[in-house]
Image (cartoon, rainbow, N blue to C red; front, side, top):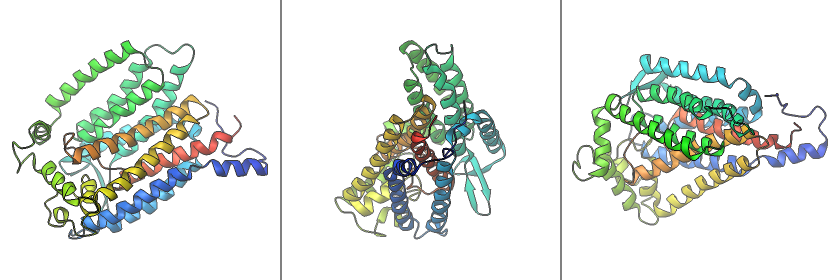
Amino acid sequence: MRAISVLPTRPDRWTLVRRVRSVSWLLGGSALALSAIGLVVISSASADMSTDYEVRQAAWVGLGLLVMAAAAAVDYSFLLRYAFWIYLAAVAALAAVTFFGHEAGGARSWIGIGGFGGQPSDFCKIATVLLLARHMAEAQAPVAPRGWLWAASALVVVPVLLIAMQPDMGGALMFVPMLAAMAVVAGLRLRPALIALGVAAVVAGAIWIFALQDYQKDRMSSFFRPHADPLGSGYQVRQSRIAIGSGQMLGKGYGEGTQSNLQFLPTPHTDFVFAVLGEEYGFMGVTVVLGLLLLYLGNGVRVALAARDPAGLLLVVGLLAFMAGHVLYNTAMVVGLLPITGIPLPFLSYGGSFMLFCCAATGLMIGLDIRRFVNI
């Protein structure tokens, strides 16, 4: 793929003005607004905890803004050119942490440095999307290469299996909607799709038998029988529902959420931050946050539709699929519509590497939007 410069050799004044206007301010603005709301909710949810999670999250947000700016400044065609090597580096880091990483929350998926930690799986998301975008762009040619779907699936299976071995089933699960969305946009046909679904079912069965821990199987079972073990496997979703329901229309107010402050709600600053939002700010607060998330995703779709080449389109689709998958699963999980698993909410849940992933994804989309006006 030919490299594309960020700026023309001698840009005229109107080209620069048009390029500045092309930046999706709503995309970046909604991300910043969600991050600010997340800081407020995390501050309340962790008020009685020994660790100052809101201070750490503020540091991650600040670093994330720098990452967003850097990602927007880098020409995405440059990243696509070296996508294979980026992918290999990400998989190597993922394999290393799977076997030698720090264990937290029952999963060996963390790298801890000086009290701060991160998950290479978040970096692997972007690396995988970059390589798939480059690979699948060829499938939109008049004569698509044979077996492109199987090659793409193999690229996804490698990080999925490594993440499942940690075990982090939530992180592994999020690769599924990404692959499906990109494959559909790349021109997936019905027969290969049905075969892929069959293979996916076999892989899912193997993961259930060989990779899932007993507590993870209990969580799956509690989804179908939520009242069978209210103090065990069904405890989390029961407390989450109580928190959201008690918020009613306007909520109890900042710091007044009894479920989180009295520690009835597990991990209120990470996986269940949406439940804290519902308890303290009620239906109105939830509506505002969901509106901002829809604004973010909608503007991401606008960037995808305006992409100048198939690789750029697929890149945005993959990143949006990851973001949308996290939003849909997390919000459905906390109200009991899906089984409980460790899937954070973009920009709101506490987590350094996930915040950096969200900001990097946003920066890449903004950068792609800017380069619509660069001459090819």
